[in-house]
Amino acid sequence: MSVLIFVDHSEGHIKKASFEALTYGAKIAEQTGTTAEALVLGTVSDDLAALGKYGVKKVHQVNNESLNHLDAQVYAKVIAEAATASGATVVVISHTQTGKAIAGRVAVRLKAGLVAGACALPDTSNGFVVKKTVFSGKAFANVSISSPVKVISLNPNSYTTIAGEGTAEVSQLSIAVDAPKVKVTAVNKVSGEIPLTEAEIVVSGGRGLKGPENWGILLDLAKELGAATACSRPVGDAHWRPHHEHVGQTGVQVAPNLYIAIGISGAIQHLAGVNRSKIIVVINKDPEAPFFKAADYGIVGDAFEVVPKLTEEIKKMKAK
Amino acid sequence: MKILVCVSKTPDTTSKIAFTDGNSKFDENGVQWIINPYDEWYSLVRAIELKEKDPATTVHLVTVGGADAEPIIRKALALGGDEAIRVNADGSDSYFIASQIAAIAKDGYDLVFTGKETIDYNGSSIGAMVAELLDVPYISLATKFELNGTTATVTREIEGGEEVAELALPAVVSCQKGVAEQRIPNMRGIMAARTKPLKVVEPAATDTLTSIVSFELPPAKAGVKLVSPDNVGELVRLLHEEAKAI
Ligand SMILES: Cc1cc2nc3c(=O)[nH]c(=O)nc-3n(C[C@H](O)[C@H](O)[C@H](O)COP(=O)(O)OP(=O)(O)OC[C@H]3O[C@@H](n4cnc5c(N)ncnc54)[C@H](O)[C@@H]3O)c2cc1C
Image 1 (spheres, each protein chain N blue to C red):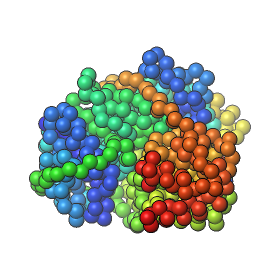
Image 2 (cartoon, rainbow over the protein chains, first blue to last red):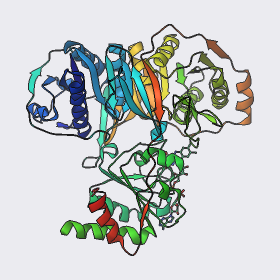
Image 3 (cartoon, rainbow over the protein chains, first blue to last red):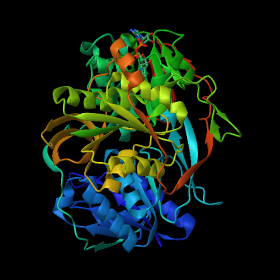
Image 4 (cartoon, chains in turn orange, purple):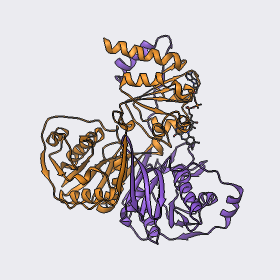
């Protein structure tokens, strides 16, 4: 029996969300007295034996170049076959763009109950109950899975990666890979940008910044902090910022360590997507802005004065 | 071309989230129901646009839900679409729901649209499951969808960017912002929706693999610590030393 963790990679490197999934899956294996095994599809340049640091004993690779592009149908078949071959009772996938394309398919193939968007370890004291976010982060549900095989997709940034010692045994799996039915004709990646859902720090701007020409102060702050940038919905709708930066109930849901909200009022739909952030800082000139009620730290003041000062102070702190 | 659009009923985005029966049920008291925004704004509108371009296209709506879902279905029909099917069953298990939709979709549909996710359960998994049950391709998180005969060209969100893919129908596609622009139903649409067929079918026999045991609300914040705008350095100190966030 095993816990099988699907490991995702991009440009040859394993993704941050996958390290979280590995740590999480290894912990479930420990909890249920089974072994943690990882599955890598396609070619990677990272050292796979080093995944042992996260608690997995074995790494299975299906080293087939056609798997470097995601075709959900092809992936699901390979993952389900690998799960069956390794006797997996739990399959862990990250709840990322890739994970969302495949978790449901894998669950159907394995006739496994799926908890999508898990945010904590399962409670195995009485059955198998997994906590997940619902109502776009406004609440949590504890979901019981009754099928013998279980699939969990883990929200990024909700389980802390722990790297220890250890090397995993790497082996090649020979599984027939179907020809993809989806032909990828173009890939447009903004390289060097931190994916919003994986970022430790997010700097976000709202209508209070008045216009796209004023985003410079926010970008400077983000750069100084190594943060990803986000925005409120009206900012995305007005095309001041690209729409994939729109966070909230009808946008991206994020849970970084630190979320800095600048000129955002804190409408209920905005809060829904960001209130799982560990620390929230609000900069708003209106002391009555609802966002202050959801914040840990705040400055009542004009963003155009406060934000450049904040960037300067961070520079100073780093110089120390 | 036969298109099936999945629609789901969700609480209005301003709803107070509370629970009853020992935190085991969502408290529906005073809740306004809406069509899940991703279904309404993007997948439904895109399906209607495809029908406007090619009148031979039929657009059917499907929902899995009780009779209380009917006002939402009528509202969706007011935007467009030829008829709706309600599978008379309640449930939160995605395998159960997807199996019901797949049972309907097997009936000769070329394209199944879902929203990116529902804003209540946020599973983002129904489309993938339906696709697997039908054994057809699935494109998740589409931001653009074009059709040329039975070949679809879809732009979808991937980590850190976008990807353009081409595929032959049948397929399942989950839609998000970019695919279409929200529309407001007009009087003619609302009148027409009243007489559009709304078929009620009983659920297909299938398994339920998960169930919700209980709900919880996130712990309340302790309260905001305010720092003077003339002392921004203090905020940096707090974030570094107290919160250990930078
Ligand atoms: C169905 C539905 C779904 C929605 N989904 C989302 C969602 O997913 N995400 C989302 O964000 N919104 C969403 N909304 C919109 C939401 O209700 C709010 O309208 C929106 O979040 C407001 O954006 P904002 O805070 O940028 O703008 P505003 O509400 O206009 O707030 C601007 C803020 O900036 C402050 N300000 C102005 N000038 C300055 C200055 N110089 N310095 C500092 N502060 C300043 C003001 O005091 C104010 O608080 C949704 C709405 C609906 C109906």
